[in-house]
Image 1 (cartoon, rainbow, N blue to C red):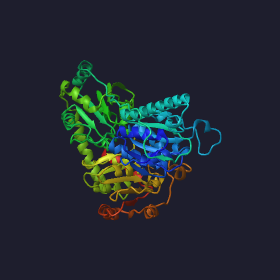
Image 2 (spheres, rainbow, N blue to C red):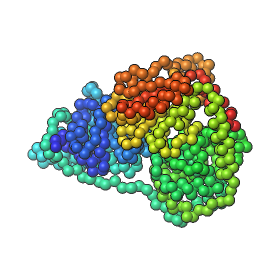
Image 3 (cartoon, helix red, strand yellow):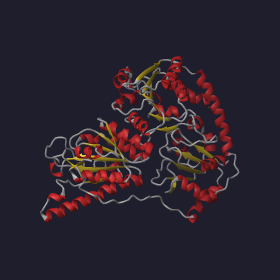
Image 4 (cartoon, rainbow, N blue to C red):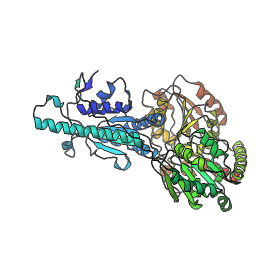
Length: 572
């Protein structure tokens, strides 16, 4: 097997393999040639080639999202690296492990006018778990005879190996992005038959904290005396909470469990549509719902309504469970349990008692009424975004992966009780629209399950380079809701649609369609302009598996906000 002649490239790939990192997304370039050679020549490595670095980074993020293992990203020097930043920020806030490996010019070439050269050292410092800045290596130490120079090279190599180990371990231990910046001297393309290095290996260590029964007891005592508790679950990977814990939470009459589309846990007594429940409550209703204890776990919460409620009607106690971090989202956080949720519940449940309470039963009765009103409203509404979501969300096959774009797409999905066999994902770390399609495609590549991606038009066109790769599974489906602009800006509170330039600078109206993109990238293309066409097209969409398929659903631009606002009036 051939190897790059440059030792540090060999060390990086060798240490990646030692830690189970076997997937790499490479964007073309010259300065990163030693890394490209070393990764692609190794038969254990699965390497993907994606030209657009922004898409490449989100593609890798999608793979890591599914495998829950670090994915390496490799790019050349200069502005190529900066295109990774949106995905790095998403990975940072979504706890997804990415290993960014950037080629660079040697330090003495920075800021002297060399082409394709920027200040790459610590460029991601605000959104990175660790930045490793390596030393350049010119030639293998075996070819040097000067003892002092040999000593310097050995020390330099040891530094590099320690830094690589530390960065990779941080990605694994803390489940987040890290950056390894590697300056290379030319020549870049030379190869050797045998490896010339055997790097030091430093194993990663688990970071979960311990907690004693003595430490837990005061919190158990508070729980046992409270009659109103809310458990709120944010973004949560599937199958990480044991069913016995879910059942225990669902059986407690003093506990309401609020979940979102991205929470990926299910129980018949959990409230899955938060905004339907609280969207039209008045002050009296909010006071009845106000909990004594708020217990949260999982990542970011989508619902703005639950955030506003809990900030205005704060619980006496807010406890968050997460091995890594706790955000004071509701301005009343007073305990962070640095544990995995499963670990926390297994430790504390034996100490807890189910309080006599009508709290849950009262709100489940409200939920039942709201569900009936939801159904009656949909039956009478005209063709619009809301109606389109009702059709497409019910059409997704069992046991599929559902990826949802940000902005209005994921917020509409929040209003529906989704198929319980689906696994649901959305880039909610930064809630950006910029890489949703690329992430969905990377996730589809990584999983064996059929994947559907639902997105709005602006998000889709923004990330259309996501389709520019050879890895998209033939059963991959995209559904684009095209309302000819950024429809969410009509829905947001306090917006003024009569503001000068609203159509141009906020809603950004357009007349684009996905038809030509589908022709260029080899997608089946389907359209629907009304409810009747949607019913037919959604069946067609899932019957086509000869190549990836896209269904573009066209909805009226100007009525969606009125339909949605009237919905909350109706369910009240």
